[in-house]
Amino acid sequence: MTVSPGPPPWPLPPSWTLTPPRQAETTEELTPPAPEPVAPEPVVLTAHRTIALLAPDDAGAREVLGAVPGVKVDTRTVRTPSPGFAGVYELADAAARAMSEGADGVVIVQGADAPEETAWALDLLHPGDAPLVLAADPGHAGDVADAISVAAAAPPRSGCLLVARGEIHAARHVRRTGSPLPELTSPGAGPLGHVTDGTVRLLWRPPERITVRDGANGGRVPRVGLHTAVLGDDGLLLGALAERCDGLVVAAATTGGVPEEIALVLAEASARMPVVVASPVGYDSIPMTSLDPLKARVLMHLLLAAGRGRDAVLAAFAAAERPGPAQL
View 1 (cartoon, helix red, strand yellow):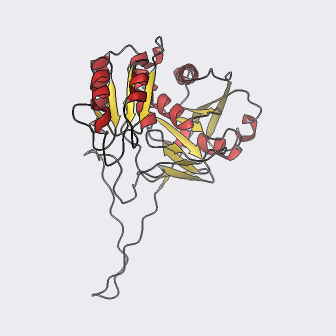
View 2 (tube, helix red, strand yellow):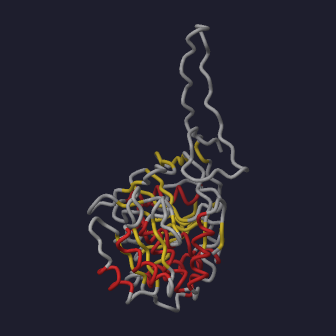
View 3 (cartoon, helix red, strand yellow):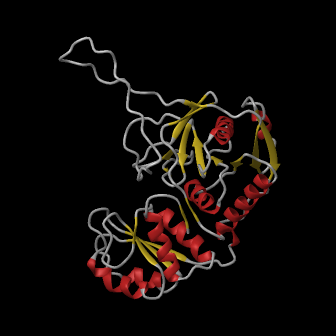
């Protein structure tokens, strides 16, 4: 696959190369024309792929059963998932079951209040090579058909992808910006690709994945707090939150780090539970993560739910910051 030129938003593994843009023919020696942009090559669908379509009922799915030539769609009725993380575990189990029964990929047609968090949790819980694709707007038949095309064409180890209005987003970078319609964006990365009339074009290779070992157990239900450090924060609210949490994510200012006024509260909390700061500048001895605060909270929840202790959780966050894939 040819990858469009431009710096990727994550570390570039040595095995990946970028194809430089083609140069237009030069007619004037001293003033060569600008290079022509190289359009990403369409991904060719593999014939006779089987994609499992998970939806609350198959009434709406019938409209797209024949939308992608060469792809067999296996519709599977799933009940509306439970609220919160319990519903994520249910979807992960249903997807794993479909893949164990021969599906080459899975499309989830499920209305989600927080599609970016749901997709990221599914990405962390899915250890296999087959792609998971979340149709961000279940009521939009075009999104469902595009999601099937993406599931059939995505390269191995793509993890969980979101599709909305012809755009493909990686779970690690995507955020929801629209309401009530799910408008998606990937700050600092941009969309992973596009779908046009069933043709899938990838602008970047999917990011290297991190997964949580034994994360699908979900036996424990931890409380992970999310606190935003703001101007005038004296630490009182943070201290009250920390007393009732099993783990804590602090969203700090992008340039100023964590205010000094809450340093003592953070130090006390970090001595008894995992605490990470979502900030590019970090804070003294408190571990830092480059993940979006919401994504960091999801990762910490899954790690704690899988039985990881404080030190193991912090080690997992450190591993997630290093280049390359990681199993946490």
